[in-house]
Image 1 (cartoon, chains in turn yellow, blue):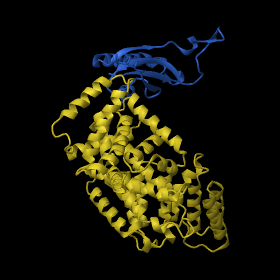
Image 2: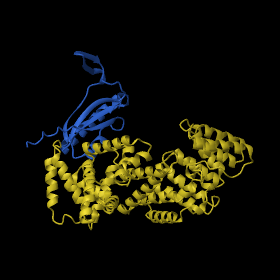
Image 3: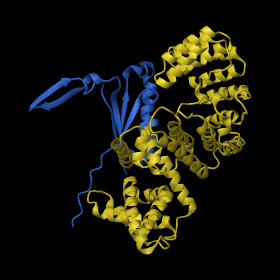
Image 4: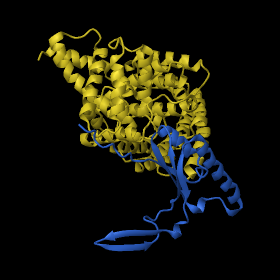
Length: 430
Length: 121
Protein backbone atom coordinates (compact mmCIF):
# COMPACT_ATOMS: atom_id res chain seq x y z
CA UNK A 1 0.00 0.00 0.00
CA UNK A 2 1.56 3.29 -1.01
CA UNK A 3 2.08 5.98 1.48
CA UNK A 4 0.92 8.60 -1.02
CA UNK A 5 -2.58 7.19 -1.41
CA UNK A 6 -2.92 6.73 2.32
CA UNK A 7 -1.80 10.31 2.88
CA UNK A 8 -4.21 11.54 0.19
CA UNK A 9 -7.06 9.61 1.78
CA UNK A 10 -6.20 10.92 5.21
CA UNK A 11 -6.03 14.50 3.95
CA UNK A 12 -9.34 14.16 2.08
CA UNK A 13 -11.03 12.68 5.13
CA UNK A 14 -9.69 15.37 7.39
CA UNK A 15 -10.93 18.13 5.08
CA UNK A 16 -14.20 16.58 4.02
CA UNK A 17 -15.21 14.43 6.98
CA UNK A 18 -17.64 16.85 8.65
CA UNK A 19 -19.33 17.90 5.41
CA UNK A 20 -19.67 14.33 4.13
CA UNK A 21 -20.88 13.07 7.50
CA UNK A 22 -23.48 15.85 7.68
CA UNK A 23 -24.89 14.89 4.29
CA UNK A 24 -24.76 11.16 5.00
CA UNK A 25 -26.67 11.51 8.25
CA UNK A 26 -29.47 13.29 6.40
CA UNK A 27 -29.53 10.73 3.59
CA UNK A 28 -29.30 7.70 5.89
CA UNK A 29 -31.32 9.07 8.77
CA UNK A 30 -28.93 7.39 11.17
CA UNK A 31 -25.92 8.95 12.90
CA UNK A 32 -24.13 5.72 13.79
CA UNK A 33 -24.71 4.10 10.41
CA UNK A 34 -23.33 7.24 8.72
CA UNK A 35 -20.17 7.12 10.84
CA UNK A 36 -19.65 3.41 10.26
CA UNK A 37 -20.19 3.79 6.52
CA UNK A 38 -17.75 6.69 6.44
CA UNK A 39 -15.16 4.52 8.15
CA UNK A 40 -15.77 1.81 5.52
CA UNK A 41 -15.33 4.38 2.76
CA UNK A 42 -12.01 5.46 4.24
CA UNK A 43 -10.72 1.89 4.12
CA UNK A 44 -12.01 1.57 0.53
CA UNK A 45 -10.38 4.84 -0.49
CA UNK A 46 -6.91 3.70 0.53
CA UNK A 47 -7.25 0.66 -1.75
CA UNK A 48 -9.06 2.28 -4.67
CA UNK A 49 -6.98 5.46 -4.80
CA UNK A 50 -3.83 3.39 -4.82
CA UNK A 51 -5.20 1.49 -7.83
CA UNK A 52 -6.94 4.30 -9.74
CA UNK A 53 -5.34 7.46 -8.41
CA UNK A 54 -6.96 10.12 -6.24
CA UNK A 55 -10.33 11.15 -7.72
CA UNK A 56 -10.94 14.67 -8.91
CA UNK A 57 -13.54 15.35 -6.23
CA UNK A 58 -12.57 13.27 -3.23
CA UNK A 59 -15.53 14.49 -1.18
CA UNK A 60 -18.08 13.32 -3.77
CA UNK A 61 -16.26 9.98 -4.11
CA UNK A 62 -16.35 9.46 -0.36
CA UNK A 63 -20.03 10.38 -0.10
CA UNK A 64 -21.12 7.98 -2.83
CA UNK A 65 -18.90 5.16 -1.59
CA UNK A 66 -20.05 5.61 1.99
CA UNK A 67 -23.70 5.55 0.86
CA UNK A 68 -23.13 2.25 -0.98
CA UNK A 69 -21.38 0.80 2.06
CA UNK A 70 -24.34 1.90 4.17
CA UNK A 71 -26.65 -0.02 1.82
CA UNK A 72 -24.45 -3.11 2.28
CA UNK A 73 -24.65 -2.70 6.02
CA UNK A 74 -28.44 -2.27 5.92
CA UNK A 75 -28.80 -5.44 3.80
CA UNK A 76 -26.75 -7.40 6.30
CA UNK A 77 -28.60 -6.01 9.31
CA UNK A 78 -31.58 -8.29 10.00
CA UNK A 79 -32.78 -6.53 13.13
CA UNK A 80 -33.47 -3.05 11.82
CA UNK A 81 -37.23 -2.69 11.64
CA UNK A 82 -37.56 -0.12 8.88
CA UNK A 83 -34.66 -1.29 6.76
CA UNK A 84 -36.86 -2.10 3.79
CA UNK A 85 -38.12 1.48 3.54
CA UNK A 86 -34.67 2.87 4.06
CA UNK A 87 -33.12 0.64 1.44
CA UNK A 88 -35.79 1.67 -1.03
CA UNK A 89 -35.16 5.37 -0.37
CA UNK A 90 -31.42 4.88 -0.78
CA UNK A 91 -31.83 2.84 -3.95
CA UNK A 92 -33.84 5.68 -5.45
CA UNK A 93 -31.06 8.10 -4.60
CA UNK A 94 -28.50 5.79 -6.26
CA UNK A 95 -30.50 5.98 -9.47
CA UNK A 96 -30.55 9.76 -9.56
CA UNK A 97 -28.82 11.17 -12.63
CA UNK A 98 -25.58 13.00 -11.96
CA UNK A 99 -25.19 11.12 -8.73
CA UNK A 100 -21.48 11.72 -8.42
CA UNK A 101 -21.77 15.46 -8.88
CA UNK A 102 -21.21 17.36 -5.66
CA UNK A 103 -24.30 18.47 -3.84
CA UNK A 104 -25.34 22.10 -4.18
CA UNK A 105 -23.12 24.24 -1.96
CA UNK A 106 -26.21 25.57 -0.19
CA UNK A 107 -27.45 22.10 0.63
CA UNK A 108 -24.04 21.07 1.96
CA UNK A 109 -24.07 24.16 4.18
CA UNK A 110 -27.59 23.31 5.35
CA UNK A 111 -26.49 19.79 6.27
CA UNK A 112 -23.60 21.16 8.28
CA UNK A 113 -25.99 23.44 10.20
CA UNK A 114 -28.38 20.53 10.79
CA UNK A 115 -25.49 18.57 12.22
CA UNK A 116 -24.45 21.41 14.53
CA UNK A 117 -27.97 21.91 15.86
CA UNK A 118 -28.45 18.18 16.35
CA UNK A 119 -25.16 17.74 18.20
CA UNK A 120 -26.06 20.68 20.45
CA UNK A 121 -29.68 19.65 21.06
CA UNK A 122 -30.77 20.53 24.61
CA UNK A 123 -32.14 17.01 25.14
CA UNK A 124 -28.52 15.80 25.25
CA UNK A 125 -26.39 16.29 28.36
CA UNK A 126 -23.97 19.20 28.04
CA UNK A 127 -20.92 16.89 28.15
CA UNK A 128 -22.42 14.80 25.37
CA UNK A 129 -23.12 17.90 23.27
CA UNK A 130 -19.52 19.01 23.60
CA UNK A 131 -18.09 15.58 22.80
CA UNK A 132 -20.42 14.99 19.88
CA UNK A 133 -19.73 18.42 18.39
CA UNK A 134 -15.97 17.96 18.62
CA UNK A 135 -16.12 14.45 17.19
CA UNK A 136 -18.57 15.14 14.35
CA UNK A 137 -17.68 18.68 13.31
CA UNK A 138 -14.20 19.09 14.64
CA UNK A 139 -11.15 17.16 13.67
CA UNK A 140 -10.59 15.48 17.03
CA UNK A 141 -10.54 11.74 17.59
CA UNK A 142 -12.36 10.11 20.49
CA UNK A 143 -9.00 9.60 22.22
CA UNK A 144 -8.05 13.25 21.86
CA UNK A 145 -11.39 14.41 23.22
CA UNK A 146 -11.05 11.99 26.13
CA UNK A 147 -7.57 13.33 26.98
CA UNK A 148 -8.71 16.93 26.72
CA UNK A 149 -11.52 16.35 29.21
CA UNK A 150 -9.51 14.02 31.49
CA UNK A 151 -11.83 11.11 30.83
CA UNK A 152 -10.75 7.55 30.02
CA UNK A 153 -11.12 6.82 26.30
CA UNK A 154 -13.63 3.95 26.72
CA UNK A 155 -15.79 6.21 28.89
CA UNK A 156 -15.70 8.95 26.25
CA UNK A 157 -16.51 6.42 23.51
CA UNK A 158 -19.43 5.22 25.62
CA UNK A 159 -20.65 8.81 26.06
CA UNK A 160 -20.62 9.29 22.29
CA UNK A 161 -22.42 6.01 21.62
CA UNK A 162 -25.09 6.82 24.19
CA UNK A 163 -25.66 10.28 22.70
CA UNK A 164 -26.03 8.88 19.19
CA UNK A 165 -28.38 6.21 20.48
CA UNK A 166 -30.55 8.85 22.13
CA UNK A 167 -30.65 10.88 18.91
CA UNK A 168 -31.84 7.77 17.06
CA UNK A 169 -34.25 6.29 19.62
CA UNK A 170 -35.81 9.50 20.91
CA UNK A 171 -35.84 10.87 17.35
CA UNK A 172 -34.09 14.13 17.83
CA UNK A 173 -34.86 15.72 14.46
CA UNK A 174 -32.04 16.41 12.02
CA UNK A 175 -32.81 19.99 11.15
CA UNK A 176 -32.20 23.64 11.72
CA UNK A 177 -34.85 24.72 14.24
CA UNK A 178 -37.80 26.77 12.99
CA UNK A 179 -37.61 30.56 13.41
CA UNK A 180 -39.54 30.70 16.68
CA UNK A 181 -37.03 28.38 18.37
CA UNK A 182 -33.92 29.49 16.51
CA UNK A 183 -32.60 32.16 18.85
CA UNK A 184 -32.84 29.94 21.95
CA UNK A 185 -31.31 27.00 20.17
CA UNK A 186 -28.54 29.10 18.61
CA UNK A 187 -27.66 30.40 22.07
CA UNK A 188 -27.26 26.75 23.08
CA UNK A 189 -24.93 26.08 20.15
CA UNK A 190 -22.81 29.14 20.94
CA UNK A 191 -22.61 28.01 24.58
CA UNK A 192 -21.19 24.66 23.49
CA UNK A 193 -18.55 26.31 21.30
CA UNK A 194 -17.58 28.77 24.03
CA UNK A 195 -17.40 25.97 26.58
CA UNK A 196 -14.95 24.15 24.31
CA UNK A 197 -12.87 27.31 24.10
CA UNK A 198 -12.92 27.91 27.84
CA UNK A 199 -12.01 24.32 28.54
CA UNK A 200 -8.94 24.83 26.38
CA UNK A 201 -8.23 28.21 27.90
CA UNK A 202 -8.52 27.22 31.53
CA UNK A 203 -5.33 26.02 33.13
CA UNK A 204 -7.11 23.62 35.41
CA UNK A 205 -5.28 20.55 34.21
CA UNK A 206 -4.94 18.12 31.38
CA UNK A 207 -2.46 17.96 28.57
CA UNK A 208 -1.61 21.54 27.66
CA UNK A 209 -1.07 20.75 23.99
CA UNK A 210 -4.43 19.03 23.66
CA UNK A 211 -5.98 21.96 25.48
CA UNK A 212 -4.52 24.38 22.94
CA UNK A 213 -6.12 22.15 20.34
CA UNK A 214 -9.50 22.76 21.99
CA UNK A 215 -9.12 26.54 21.56
CA UNK A 216 -8.17 26.03 17.93
CA UNK A 217 -11.18 23.74 17.40
CA UNK A 218 -13.53 26.24 19.06
CA UNK A 219 -12.24 29.01 16.79
CA UNK A 220 -12.63 26.76 13.78
CA UNK A 221 -16.22 25.99 14.79
CA UNK A 222 -16.78 29.70 15.34
CA UNK A 223 -15.55 30.45 11.82
CA UNK A 224 -17.77 27.72 10.40
CA UNK A 225 -20.82 29.16 12.19
CA UNK A 226 -19.93 32.64 10.91
CA UNK A 227 -19.86 31.32 7.36
CA UNK A 228 -23.13 29.45 7.82
CA UNK A 229 -24.97 32.20 9.71
CA UNK A 230 -23.38 35.43 8.46
CA UNK A 231 -26.29 37.62 9.56
CA UNK A 232 -26.23 36.83 13.26
CA UNK A 233 -24.22 39.39 15.26
CA UNK A 234 -23.84 37.11 18.30
CA UNK A 235 -22.21 34.42 16.13
CA UNK A 236 -19.67 37.02 14.97
CA UNK A 237 -19.40 38.33 18.54
CA UNK A 238 -18.44 34.91 19.86
CA UNK A 239 -15.76 34.43 17.19
CA UNK A 240 -14.42 37.93 17.91
CA UNK A 241 -14.33 37.17 21.64
CA UNK A 242 -12.42 33.92 21.14
CA UNK A 243 -9.90 35.53 18.75
CA UNK A 244 -9.29 38.44 21.11
CA UNK A 245 -8.67 36.11 24.05
CA UNK A 246 -6.55 33.80 21.96
CA UNK A 247 -4.34 36.71 20.85
CA UNK A 248 -2.83 36.58 24.36
CA UNK A 249 -2.10 32.85 24.30
CA UNK A 250 1.69 33.18 24.01
CA UNK A 251 1.97 35.92 26.61
CA UNK A 252 -0.13 34.44 29.38
CA UNK A 253 2.17 31.58 30.33
CA UNK A 254 5.80 32.15 31.39
CA UNK A 255 8.79 29.90 30.71
CA UNK A 256 7.95 27.83 33.83
CA UNK A 257 4.39 27.23 32.67
CA UNK A 258 2.98 29.64 35.25
CA UNK A 259 0.12 31.94 34.35
CA UNK A 260 1.02 35.60 33.86
CA UNK A 261 -1.66 38.12 34.79
CA UNK A 262 -2.86 40.63 32.21
CA UNK A 263 -0.98 43.49 33.89
CA UNK A 264 2.32 41.66 33.74
CA UNK A 265 2.03 40.28 30.22
CA UNK A 266 4.47 41.35 27.53
CA UNK A 267 2.07 43.05 25.15
CA UNK A 268 4.52 42.82 22.27
CA UNK A 269 3.86 39.08 22.29
CA UNK A 270 0.13 39.51 21.67
CA UNK A 271 -0.97 38.30 18.25
CA UNK A 272 -1.83 41.51 16.35
CA UNK A 273 -3.41 39.58 13.47
CA UNK A 274 -5.92 37.94 15.79
CA UNK A 275 -6.65 41.27 17.51
CA UNK A 276 -7.29 42.99 14.17
CA UNK A 277 -9.53 40.18 12.96
CA UNK A 278 -11.44 40.17 16.25
CA UNK A 279 -11.94 43.93 16.13
CA UNK A 280 -13.09 43.85 12.53
CA UNK A 281 -15.64 41.14 13.28
CA UNK A 282 -16.84 42.94 16.37
CA UNK A 283 -17.24 46.27 14.54
CA UNK A 284 -19.38 44.77 11.82
CA UNK A 285 -21.43 42.85 14.40
CA UNK A 286 -22.06 45.96 16.51
CA UNK A 287 -23.23 47.85 13.43
CA UNK A 288 -26.25 45.55 13.32
CA UNK A 289 -27.41 47.15 16.57
CA UNK A 290 -28.47 43.89 18.20
CA UNK A 291 -26.05 43.66 21.11
CA UNK A 292 -25.80 40.46 23.12
CA UNK A 293 -23.58 38.86 25.74
CA UNK A 294 -20.88 37.70 23.33
CA UNK A 295 -20.58 41.07 21.58
CA UNK A 296 -20.36 42.80 24.96
CA UNK A 297 -17.67 40.43 26.23
CA UNK A 298 -15.80 40.83 22.94
CA UNK A 299 -16.01 44.62 23.34
CA UNK A 300 -14.44 44.31 26.80
CA UNK A 301 -11.73 42.01 25.45
CA UNK A 302 -11.09 44.47 22.60
CA UNK A 303 -10.55 47.37 25.02
CA UNK A 304 -7.93 45.30 26.84
CA UNK A 305 -6.35 44.09 23.62
CA UNK A 306 -5.95 47.52 22.08
CA UNK A 307 -4.68 49.41 25.15
CA UNK A 308 -0.98 50.26 24.97
CA UNK A 309 -0.51 49.56 28.68
CA UNK A 310 -2.71 48.31 31.46
CA UNK A 311 -2.80 51.84 32.96
CA UNK A 312 -4.07 53.29 29.69
CA UNK A 313 -6.94 50.81 29.47
CA UNK A 314 -10.38 52.45 29.37
CA UNK A 315 -11.65 50.97 32.62
CA UNK A 316 -14.65 53.30 32.83
CA UNK A 317 -15.88 51.96 29.50
CA UNK A 318 -15.13 48.40 30.62
CA UNK A 319 -17.17 48.89 33.79
CA UNK A 320 -20.07 50.25 31.71
CA UNK A 321 -19.88 47.20 29.42
CA UNK A 322 -19.98 44.89 32.45
CA UNK A 323 -23.07 46.73 33.63
CA UNK A 324 -24.71 46.17 30.23
CA UNK A 325 -23.63 42.53 30.32
CA UNK A 326 -25.19 42.06 33.77
CA UNK A 327 -28.50 43.26 32.32
CA UNK A 328 -28.36 40.52 29.66
CA UNK A 329 -27.17 37.74 31.95
CA UNK A 330 -27.07 38.71 35.64
CA UNK A 331 -24.26 36.92 37.47
CA UNK A 332 -22.07 37.62 40.50
CA UNK A 333 -19.01 36.92 38.35
CA UNK A 334 -19.91 39.90 36.16
CA UNK A 335 -20.59 42.08 39.20
CA UNK A 336 -17.19 41.22 40.66
CA UNK A 337 -15.45 42.07 37.38
CA UNK A 338 -17.37 45.33 37.15
CA UNK A 339 -16.29 46.27 40.69
CA UNK A 340 -12.65 45.56 39.82
CA UNK A 341 -12.89 47.68 36.65
CA UNK A 342 -14.35 50.57 38.66
CA UNK A 343 -11.51 50.27 41.15
CA UNK A 344 -8.95 50.44 38.38
CA UNK A 345 -10.72 53.48 36.97
CA UNK A 346 -10.15 55.18 40.34
CA UNK A 347 -13.74 54.72 41.56
CA UNK A 348 -12.89 52.47 44.49
CA UNK A 349 -15.96 53.36 46.58
CA UNK A 350 -18.32 52.56 43.72
CA UNK A 351 -16.57 49.21 43.34
CA UNK A 352 -16.83 48.37 47.04
CA UNK A 353 -20.52 49.37 46.98
CA UNK A 354 -21.17 46.70 44.32
CA UNK A 355 -19.39 44.04 46.39
CA UNK A 356 -21.29 44.91 49.58
CA UNK A 357 -24.51 43.01 48.85
CA UNK A 358 -22.57 40.04 47.40
CA UNK A 359 -20.47 39.78 50.59
CA UNK A 360 -23.60 39.98 52.74
CA UNK A 361 -25.32 37.10 50.94
CA UNK A 362 -24.70 33.52 52.03
CA UNK A 363 -24.30 31.98 48.57
CA UNK A 364 -20.95 33.60 47.68
CA UNK A 365 -19.28 33.37 51.07
CA UNK A 366 -16.70 30.89 49.68
CA UNK A 367 -16.30 32.50 46.25
CA UNK A 368 -12.57 33.31 46.11
CA UNK A 369 -12.67 35.92 43.29
CA UNK A 370 -15.12 37.98 45.35
CA UNK A 371 -12.68 38.20 48.26
CA UNK A 372 -9.73 38.79 45.95
CA UNK A 373 -11.63 41.65 44.30
CA UNK A 374 -12.41 43.15 47.70
CA UNK A 375 -8.74 42.87 48.63
CA UNK A 376 -7.75 44.66 45.43
CA UNK A 377 -10.21 47.50 46.11
CA UNK A 378 -9.18 47.83 49.76
CA UNK A 379 -5.55 47.98 48.71
CA UNK A 380 -6.35 50.77 46.29
CA UNK A 381 -8.22 52.56 49.08
CA UNK A 382 -5.05 52.38 51.20
CA UNK A 383 -6.38 49.80 53.70
CA UNK A 384 -3.38 47.43 53.61
CA UNK A 385 -4.41 45.43 56.66
CA UNK A 386 -7.92 44.88 55.32
CA UNK A 387 -6.51 43.93 51.92
CA UNK A 388 -4.14 41.40 53.49
CA UNK A 389 -7.01 39.83 55.42
CA UNK A 390 -9.23 39.68 52.33
CA UNK A 391 -6.47 38.03 50.28
CA UNK A 392 -6.13 35.54 53.13
CA UNK A 393 -9.83 34.71 52.93
CA UNK A 394 -9.57 34.36 49.15
CA UNK A 395 -6.62 31.96 49.56
CA UNK A 396 -8.56 29.89 52.08
CA UNK A 397 -11.42 29.56 49.57
CA UNK A 398 -9.15 28.38 46.73
CA UNK A 399 -8.67 24.69 45.94
CA UNK A 400 -6.05 25.04 43.23
CA UNK A 401 -2.63 24.95 44.93
CA UNK A 402 -0.88 27.31 42.51
CA UNK A 403 -3.61 29.93 42.70
CA UNK A 404 -3.74 29.59 46.48
CA UNK A 405 -0.01 30.13 46.83
CA UNK A 406 -0.27 33.22 44.63
CA UNK A 407 -3.03 34.69 46.81
CA UNK A 408 -1.09 33.91 49.99
CA UNK A 409 1.94 35.70 48.55
CA UNK A 410 -0.22 38.68 47.80
CA UNK A 411 -1.65 38.66 51.29
CA UNK A 412 1.84 38.75 52.77
CA UNK A 413 3.08 41.34 50.28
CA UNK A 414 0.20 43.73 50.91
CA UNK A 415 0.55 43.36 54.66
CA UNK A 416 4.26 44.15 54.48
CA UNK A 417 4.35 46.93 51.91
CA UNK A 418 2.85 50.37 51.41
CA UNK A 419 -0.11 50.32 48.99
CA UNK A 420 0.68 50.27 45.30
CA UNK A 421 -1.57 49.94 42.33
CA UNK A 422 -1.19 46.31 41.44
CA UNK A 423 -2.85 43.00 42.06
CA UNK A 424 -5.17 41.43 39.59
CA UNK A 425 -7.68 39.11 41.10
CA UNK A 426 -10.61 38.89 38.75
CA UNK A 427 -11.73 36.37 36.21
CA UNK A 428 -11.29 38.78 33.30
CA UNK A 429 -7.61 39.28 33.78
CA UNK A 430 -5.84 36.19 32.56
CA UNK B 1 -44.88 7.84 13.73
CA UNK B 2 -43.03 7.42 16.99
CA UNK B 3 -44.99 7.44 20.20
CA UNK B 4 -43.97 9.16 23.39
CA UNK B 5 -45.16 8.90 26.97
CA UNK B 6 -45.47 12.22 28.69
CA UNK B 7 -45.13 11.31 32.37
CA UNK B 8 -46.47 14.11 34.51
CA UNK B 9 -44.65 14.65 37.81
CA UNK B 10 -45.19 17.12 40.59
CA UNK B 11 -45.04 17.75 44.30
CA UNK B 12 -48.66 17.90 45.52
CA UNK B 13 -47.59 20.65 47.92
CA UNK B 14 -46.85 22.88 44.90
CA UNK B 15 -50.20 22.29 43.23
CA UNK B 16 -52.71 25.17 43.05
CA UNK B 17 -54.99 25.53 46.06
CA UNK B 18 -58.64 24.43 46.11
CA UNK B 19 -59.85 27.90 45.09
CA UNK B 20 -58.03 27.55 41.75
CA UNK B 21 -58.91 23.95 41.14
CA UNK B 22 -61.78 24.66 38.81
CA UNK B 23 -59.69 26.95 36.62
CA UNK B 24 -56.87 24.40 36.59
CA UNK B 25 -59.25 21.62 35.62
CA UNK B 26 -60.47 23.72 32.71
CA UNK B 27 -56.86 24.09 31.55
CA UNK B 28 -56.36 20.31 31.58
CA UNK B 29 -59.57 19.82 29.60
CA UNK B 30 -58.61 22.32 26.95
CA UNK B 31 -55.06 20.91 26.76
CA UNK B 32 -56.48 17.42 26.21
CA UNK B 33 -58.87 18.79 23.56
CA UNK B 34 -56.01 20.49 21.77
CA UNK B 35 -53.98 17.26 21.77
CA UNK B 36 -56.97 15.32 20.45
CA UNK B 37 -57.72 17.84 17.72
CA UNK B 38 -54.12 17.80 16.52
CA UNK B 39 -54.42 14.04 16.04
CA UNK B 40 -51.53 13.37 18.45
CA UNK B 41 -53.54 11.97 21.37
CA UNK B 42 -53.38 8.20 21.80
CA UNK B 43 -54.34 7.98 25.44
CA UNK B 44 -53.89 9.45 28.86
CA UNK B 45 -55.19 9.54 32.38
CA UNK B 46 -54.77 11.29 35.66
CA UNK B 47 -53.83 9.01 38.53
CA UNK B 48 -55.29 8.89 42.02
CA UNK B 49 -53.29 10.30 44.92
CA UNK B 50 -50.03 8.59 45.92
CA UNK B 51 -51.49 7.34 49.22
CA UNK B 52 -53.66 4.95 47.21
CA UNK B 53 -50.61 3.27 45.61
CA UNK B 54 -49.66 -0.35 46.29
CA UNK B 55 -46.39 -1.95 45.19
CA UNK B 56 -46.12 -5.63 44.27
CA UNK B 57 -42.97 -7.78 44.00
CA UNK B 58 -42.45 -11.51 43.70
CA UNK B 59 -39.28 -12.80 45.37
CA UNK B 60 -38.51 -16.52 45.75
CA UNK B 61 -42.04 -17.33 44.64
CA UNK B 62 -43.42 -15.19 47.41
CA UNK B 63 -45.63 -12.27 46.52
CA UNK B 64 -44.74 -9.23 48.56
CA UNK B 65 -47.36 -6.54 48.68
CA UNK B 66 -46.57 -3.23 50.29
CA UNK B 67 -48.41 -0.01 50.84
CA UNK B 68 -47.06 3.00 48.99
CA UNK B 69 -45.18 3.86 45.80
CA UNK B 70 -42.15 2.08 44.31
CA UNK B 71 -39.86 4.95 45.29
CA UNK B 72 -40.41 7.61 47.92
CA UNK B 73 -39.83 10.94 46.22
CA UNK B 74 -41.23 14.41 46.55
CA UNK B 75 -42.15 14.56 42.89
CA UNK B 76 -44.74 11.90 42.24
CA UNK B 77 -46.22 10.55 39.03
CA UNK B 78 -49.65 12.16 38.75
CA UNK B 79 -50.74 11.14 35.28
CA UNK B 80 -49.66 10.56 31.71
CA UNK B 81 -50.43 11.14 28.07
CA UNK B 82 -49.51 8.82 25.24
CA UNK B 83 -48.93 10.82 22.07
CA UNK B 84 -48.02 10.14 18.49
CA UNK B 85 -45.89 12.90 16.92
CA UNK B 86 -43.15 13.11 14.27
CA UNK B 87 -40.12 13.71 16.50
CA UNK B 88 -38.75 14.63 19.92
CA UNK B 89 -39.05 18.36 19.32
CA UNK B 90 -42.79 17.99 18.77
CA UNK B 91 -43.11 15.90 21.94
CA UNK B 92 -41.08 18.46 23.92
CA UNK B 93 -43.34 21.17 22.53
CA UNK B 94 -46.44 19.43 23.93
CA UNK B 95 -44.67 18.81 27.24
CA UNK B 96 -43.83 22.50 27.57
CA UNK B 97 -47.53 23.36 27.23
CA UNK B 98 -48.63 21.01 30.02
CA UNK B 99 -50.89 22.89 32.48
CA UNK B 100 -48.70 21.92 35.45
CA UNK B 101 -45.39 22.78 33.78
CA UNK B 102 -44.82 25.97 35.78
CA UNK B 103 -44.72 24.03 39.09
CA UNK B 104 -44.25 20.38 38.09
CA UNK B 105 -42.28 18.62 35.39
CA UNK B 106 -42.84 16.27 32.51
CA UNK B 107 -40.61 13.33 31.61
CA UNK B 108 -40.72 12.57 27.90
CA UNK B 109 -39.95 8.95 27.04
CA UNK B 110 -40.03 7.36 23.61
CA UNK B 111 -42.14 4.21 23.51
CA UNK B 112 -40.08 1.16 22.60
CA UNK B 113 -40.85 0.06 19.08
CA UNK B 114 -41.07 -3.70 18.76
CA UNK B 115 -38.69 -4.63 15.93
CA UNK B 116 -40.22 -6.35 12.92
CA UNK B 117 -39.47 -10.06 12.79
CA UNK B 118 -36.62 -10.84 10.38
CA UNK B 119 -37.76 -11.04 6.77
CA UNK B 120 -38.16 -14.59 5.43
CA UNK B 121 -35.15 -15.48 3.34
